[in-house]
Image 1 (cartoon, one colour):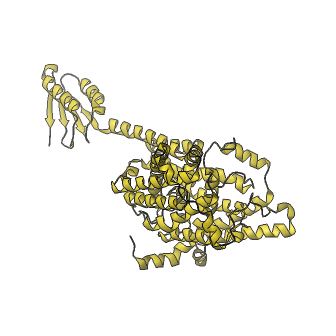
Image 2 (cartoon, rainbow, N blue to C red):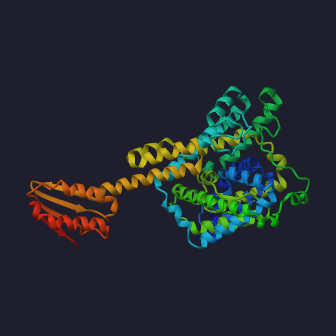
Image 3 (cartoon, one colour):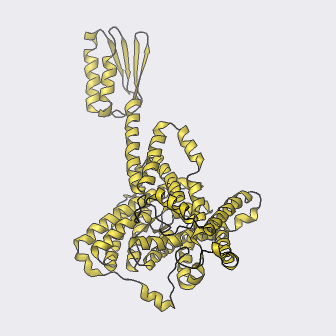
Length: 509
């Protein structure tokens, strides 16, 4: 972990800019996820603030950004519905946080390291593809679904592709102009930043938003047919409070009478397991994107997420996870330390207290362009070329993960991709454990690594095919472990070799 002086320097040079970019992406996500979960809008914002101000400082990662996660919306919505009380649901959030803290103290965070790298890379590319597909409707002016929706089958009966087709049929030219202008600015900013160093010192995403607001104002003044209006349908929709007292009155607190309800404990364990897995996978993915290739502590991440969920539940917030969309936005915006995540949380707090009227003038179309740019970075064509060059044992789990994430959801994609990846691990271990070299009547069977029962049939077949009159040399000097069944098989071969007219010898360590 860096010292205070290094954090201050990192904040001044880079992290304030990336913090703004993450804030602009996180703001509509917090509101949309709360709306989709059937929770108060403030619950999403509270979770985002806790994720930024608290979890960012405690996290095991310098670049991971936490907040309410789209992947939990279905679980949360069903839990609130079954309990009939959001206040009661908050008790489950707190208990889930305590379970995560226990998991972290037991050092169980390392489970994230068991997922194959091809699956993690597939997850990143898949999220990029999903972001692009889901943001196309918003870029076209179709804002009926919340901006953070990621499931293939939507609550309105449509799916990802039918939503795009419907959006194309009813596009709004004003939204298209704003989103295209934002994309042009982002790509041009990146290209020009290589020569005009001043641009690297300024937050491109902020200028995209300012341009989007200005264009919509100009549309209202001079081109009414293009104007997106000031309605919540096409704009950021922060709740507006008259004073700080009204904000305090809107905060919901947990109803502890629900703690005796068996459903609460079932929901808490479900939230703890799913949120922990999503956080650990996001942590792995964030590390793979980190330009400095730092290795984060998964156990510390679980502790941070647990403390965050306890805090979020106490002040009326949704459950929190590390979120790859925010984290990747942070990285691609130039974030270098946890100060960018903290900055985004601070801006969310300021937004509620001081800026709702101004922020509600931001068209969702310009935020869609920021997410489209992030999606392109995640799903860059170079990622496909690189994985294909590594061979089919890498790219098959990679593509399976992408297909399932895009067509179902994130967690299903991870589990199916991992299952396929494990099959390839077994195939690799099965086929590569020993090699047979034949030179005339001389046969060398050389074992390269440890031997399990999975290899018994292959070894048995290789020994069976050795012809009469051969001189066989079995080399197990590099092997640390041989399964009992395999060891017995080799000993049986050695003891019966002479009877088959075979001269056999064994080399041990």
